[in-house]
Amino acid sequence: MDASQYPTGAPTLEHVARVAGVSRATVSRVINNTRNVDPQIAEVVRAAVEATGYVPNQAARSLVTRRTNSVALVVSEGEDRTVPVDDAFVGRVFTDPYFGRVVSGLFSVLRPHGVNLVLMFVETDEMRRQLLGYLRQGHVDGVLLISSHAQDPLPKMLTEAGLPAVLSERPTTPLQISYVDAPQRVGARLAAEHLAARGCRKVATIAGPMDMSAGRDRLAGFREAMAEHGYPDIPSAAGYFTQESGSAAMEHLLDEHPDLDGVFAANDLMALGAVTVLHERGRRIPEDVAVIGFDDHHAAMLCRPALTTVHLPVEDMAAQMARLLLDRLDRPELPVAATVFEPTLVVRASA
Image 1 (cartoon, rainbow, N blue to C red):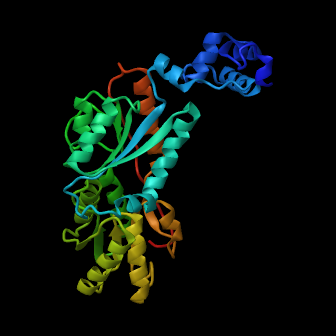
Image 2: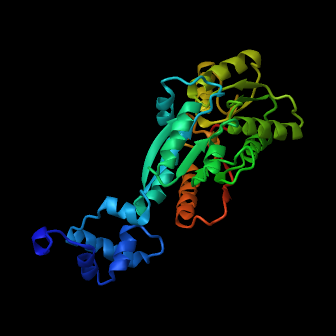
Image 3: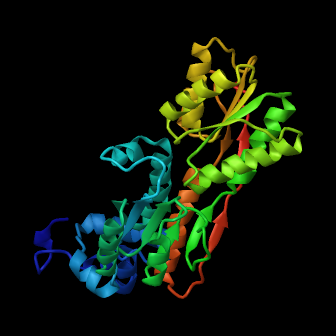
């Protein structure tokens, strides 16, 4: 169909409704991404939209729905972070496999509902104030917040402002904010149990940043479990969740403890760095040194040998964040909600 077939020169909701065989109200609900429309009917309406060439007026839609059909993915870095903030911060985010998995999970839920994702980074108090002003002006409908630093004030700022938001992990202080999380200590204990069961007796760990809850909890969980097996003194070296820091930490541990036979790295990138150093030092994996990582992203499969690691369903966790936010936007009266995903150990060739 073309515009000349319509008296006004352009198809309207009524034309779409006539082609679809439904009411104008039903067409409006589908176009405005209302979530209680039967999927089969929604598909018929979308086909009619395509057939008629109808183009929704986004400005008019926003006036009616008071929705922008956009949400912000905010990556918040605390000013007390272990690694100093610099111009490479955004680059590190985009090269981190974890971030790619998060975005993939979010899109799997947001895209079918026609919701766009606005990516924002905040690193300082001034940037947080600017962000809050942007959000209060209604440029987006809600916030998906990735924040893992204990002192980050942004979760509290969002709740006090009454802005719809979902956090990527349990808040460090009680807040009225929905979140998705995984018990990091439990995952680290799985790694310890596996190394102990293999008979490893000289075990060390490469820890994540202590200003991040994942770093603290993974170290604590690993040490607790090893202590229960009779090994209360586990050497550790600090890493920053990067491959380079994993290599440096492994060099340090081998210099200090040349007889170690097991290593737990608090993420897969650091484990990959550790494996590289072990190969350079002539250590066989896992015959001489067993290695376990954490997260189970593509770095685990790039590793040689393939990396045994603690699996977190990051894509599923991100998808649930998006669902919780969309639910809150549709029904603001809903109470805050929490979803916890359990980690599992994926055994491969490295341990």
